[in-house]
Image (cartoon, rainbow, N blue to C red; front, side, top):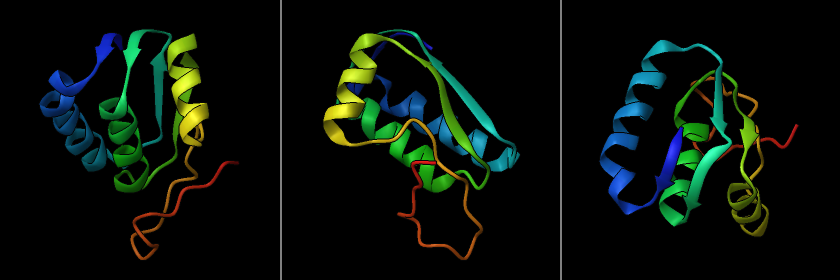
Length: 93
């Protein structure tokens, strides 16, 4: 991903979540070229973690992304989840 993940990203971000949740494959996300990462980006990543059944991992992240995720306590990886798991379960492994 490149550029800014802000409120203008919400609609296309939701489309990405829908597409990836249908694939049921592990997801690697490169956020190394993201220059602005705010609450919309955090919400999008959290949505991926709880919606996609397979493992979701941030494989590269810019300094702004790492800073925001660290402040918010959001891990760089989910462990995937079976359909029966709570929608909020996220692992830091």
